Length: 122
Image (cartoon, rainbow, N blue to C red; front, top):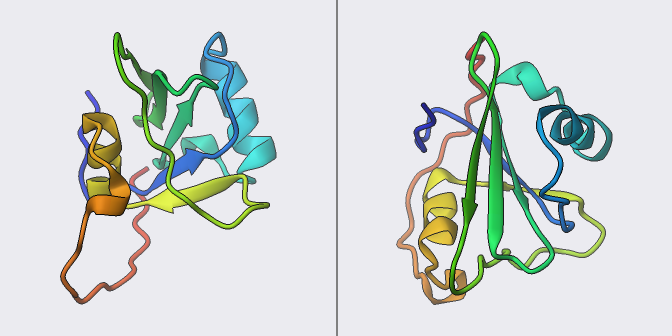
């Protein structure tokens, strides 16, 4: 079961993803485009060209899990980032906002202390 929490790191693929890709195809994108290891415990997020489908790929210690959702109406928002990047790191709260359809530009955050930690889950 996938839970969205601060215990994981989330990486959004900024290019359009082919939603026909399954475990092996998405792992290939992670390795080639993210230059990352898919079995590290991070969650990798893929959105299709029409932005109405999303897949989350997550290694759960003994195998991969995919969360897949198709919207019947509306689209997912992709954060605005510098061109030339294949991916962007998201916070758990940002992922929830994307999934819930909340406009990321309208969200105002109050300052908070942030300490970057890298956790090895597996």
